[in-house]
Structure formats: C-alpha cells, structure tokens
Image 1 (cartoon, rainbow over the protein chains, first blue to last red):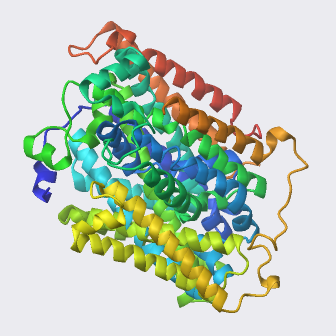
Image 2 (cartoon, each protein chain N blue to C red):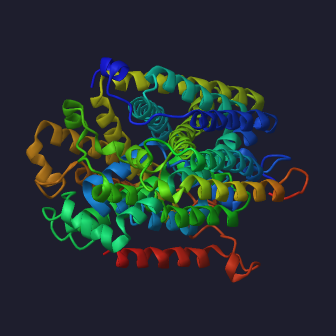
Image 3 (cartoon, each protein chain N blue to C red):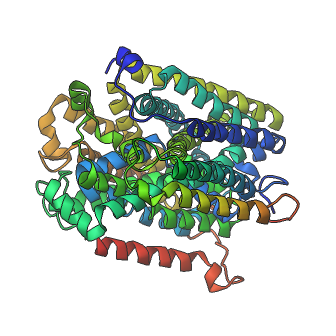
Length: 567
Length: 73
C-alpha cells in the first residue's frame, strides 16, 4: 500500500451526520478536560509516574484492561474471528485469564511489596543494573515503535471508514494523548482509560445484540456459519488435534504451552504497559484485586470483538479478504469487520458513539504505551544511566518532556510504517522477542532465591538472542518452520507461539545453569523480592467476599465453563 | 478517598454517558418522525431510542450519585 493510496484511496465506508460529529468532538473535549483538571495533582514523581499509588481496585483493574484494548486489539481480533472463527477467542481466555490470575495471586505481592516503580526497576532490585539496562532499553524502544504502529493503524482505519485525512488523524489523536498524559501523568492516563473502557462498551455492545437478533440466536448463527464457511469455525478446542484440521493451522500444544503458558504470562505479568496500572493501586489487596477484576471483564470482551466477527460470517452479504487482495480488488478486508457491522446496524448518534469507541480504543492503547515509556525512560534509563542526582521536580519535568518526545517519536514511526509497511511485521516480531524471556527471568527471580544476578542477566540475554536467532533462521530458510513450529503448515501466529516457548525454555535453562555456577545474593538482600524470604500479608481481616482468592476462584470457574461450553 | 481530587472519575463517566445518551436519544426520536430514506438493518427496533434512553438513565444516575461534594468515588 503506498502513501498515495492513503491520501486518495478507497471510498469511505460510512458517512457521519452532525450528531455523530458532535459526539466525537465531545469525547476529545472531555479527555482534554480531564487532563487539565488533573494537572494540579501531578507535581511529584510519585504522583506523575505512579498516580500517587492511590487507585482503587476497580479503577486500576479497568485501566489495566483498557490499556490493552488498543487498535490492533479491537479491529484486528474482530477480523481474526472472521478469518479463523472462534479460535480467536483463545487470546481472550486461555491466552489471558490464567496469566491475569497468576499475576494477582502470585506475582503482585512481590511487585507491590518491593515498592518498585516498574518491571525493569524490579530487575534492578533482584538482579542488578545490567539486567535492568537490558530490559528497560528494549522496552522503551519497542514501546514507542508499537505506539507508532497503533497510531498508523488508527489513522488508516479513520481514512478507510470515514475518509478522514490520515495526517490530520495522526496529529490530532497523538497531540491529544500527549497533552493529557503530559499534564496529568499516569493518573490522567488511567482516568481516561477508564472512561475509554466504558465508551468502548457503550459504543460496541449494540453490534452483537442486534447481530444475534438478525441471525436468529446462537444456534441459528452456528448453522449459518457452517453453511457459509465451516462448522469448525464455532469450535474452540475440538479441531486442534491436528494443525491441518483448523483454520489457524495450529496444534493444541501451541495454544496451551505457547500462548497459554508463555506468551500470555509474559505479556500480562511482565509487560510494564499493563503492570504499571496495577502498581498504582492504593494497597496490596487492591493491587491483587485489580487484575482479577480485569480478568472478569476480559472474559466478556469476546462478546464485543469476536462475536461481531462471527456474526459477519453469517449476515454480511459480501465476502471479506486479506489486506492485499482487498486493495487489489477494491473489496473490504478482514480488518474492516467491525466498522462494516457498525454501519449495518447503527444510524445517526449510535454511529458516532461506535466510532468514538474505536477512537477511544486506539487512544487508550497509545496513552498506555506513552505513559509506560515515560516512566521507564525517566526512572530506568535517564536517572539510572545519565543523571543520578536530579531532584524530584527535575524528574517530573523530564517525565513531561519525554511524554511529548515519546509521542513525536511515535508519530515518526507511524510515517515510517506508512512508507515501509513490512516494518510492522518486523516490529511485532521484535516485540515478541523480549516478552517470553523476560517472563522467565522475572518468574525465576520471584520464585527461586538461588537465582543470581549473573544468571538473571545471561538468561535474559540468551533467551532474547535465541528468539531473534529462530526468527532469522525461518526468514533465511522457510523450511526451518517445521523445526521451530513443529509443523510446515504453521502460520505466523503458530510460529510466534513456539518461538516464545523455546526462547522461554532457553532463558530458564541458562538462568538456572549460570546461577548454579555463580554466587547467590545473601537472603537479607532478597527480602521483599523473592518467595520464601518475604512475608506476604494475609487478608484475614476482611470477609471471604472481599478476598482476592475467592474472586480468582469465581473467575477461574467461569473461565473453565466457557471453554467447555464452546469446546 | 477519591483517587484524583474533588471530582470522581465516575462523575466524568456519568457526564459522558448522559451527554452521549441524550444526543443518541434525540437522534432516535427525530428518526421516529422522519425515517431515513436508507434505513439501517433492524431499523424497526429503534435501537437509538432505547439505547440512548439507557445511557441517559445510567449517566444521570452516575452524575447524581457521584456529584462533586458528596464524598463518593
């Protein structure tokens, strides 16, 4: 796709009325107003970077989830559901729920008790400066790049759906995010994420409701999908016995061990973009409840993302295609499922709210990236490596400046992606290089007191290196896919699953071996950081209904039932 | 404690739902009397009217319950 296409490209999908535009403009005004209102509460480092550590479990939990609802999330997974069927729901259920509950019950106490301000900050406390430097530099780089990709995706959607100028979309949305995050810091980002979360539901919930009415209910929908596509599209597990018997080309081991055990645990427990929201909780119980509340809502997100994709298979009169085919034929691509369904059911007013929901999703993801980048840059790179003696006020000023710079770099990335679209594939691969090994390092750091600083660093480096090596191997020799992904039929997603699994194993093995060969830290230095030498406060003072483990059990039970129902 | 100051985040959300709900409800009622030439699918269900009404009601309830000065949030 060329820049010229973006400027003069396809016909727009929907036409907005005056009331739709008023709703969209009101949204921008409100998020900016929140930023200006919270400016007075962002004067210290603790306020600006950690939101004063005073968020309730509900606010931290909804923000934790909202930061994840970025552009690729809403549009991409609705398109994936059209393309692969209900298998896409794995990324919301086994690919999220167990990890979120594990974060809440097992890992959160160490993050919270250590009083770290970031995940790289925890690595510094546990393994030393070298591990922090490696993790923070890679995280900062990947975060601004991902933010740029999100920005580009959003502008592209607004161009295709509304016919808006792509440059205008990029600059208005990015400057809005820059203003409200630079003014109010993490607190402003969190408040807006909660607002955006509510708007996403308010704007998107009508699509599955009206879609099910049109399709005649779930049973009738399944019959129509079986007729239009395949009966396999509505089964979650029963087609995963062989990678050649399901639309995604993946085996159940890839879903369970690659996605469920490694990628999701890596993302939900060590990606600072989401963990930062939970660290802002007012106390340990709120910090443990936040991911559980997030998990409860995460289980419901397929209703507004996956179900519209499935409904489109049944009710849309046109067939959607891949991006390249859609551009060549002038048709619609998989990624346009959500706007197409929106235009199908929503008239004036509702359409504006639906488009606002999409914009809110994009902006919450962007703000999440920017605020996480700002904290890691200021605390883990600037203060740790460049200026160790600045005042708190100086670091807040640096935080505000780095917010603006981070957004500008993201804008630059968006234009880079526009001209060299293949960069998007590479950056997403790059992002995956760091998540799985980092999870191995943090997990061993928290649960194994014998893990040493040298073990942590070399394990992280070896895991990341092996992941990059496997990726390059398949690029140079595509036949290597059968070794990396255990199947020559594997698609990109399946390859990512297995690459994550192997790199995690490499990280853990190297960490264990090097640790056993090197001197461990004395236990006195591990207090508050590692299981076995840290006293974790009990919640005996509250009733069962207020205890995290009780709600984790409830969410876990619903998760199991959902997987059985849609087996 | 209100994690942010005198105004609760839930009040902001109430404002958002109330304004959006009223705009959608208004647009839905207008279309009841002046139906569009090219109606959306399931237009006869008048989703804008009842969905706008629901958002308005929830928004108003949040605005009242979490109004600044009531100490909730």
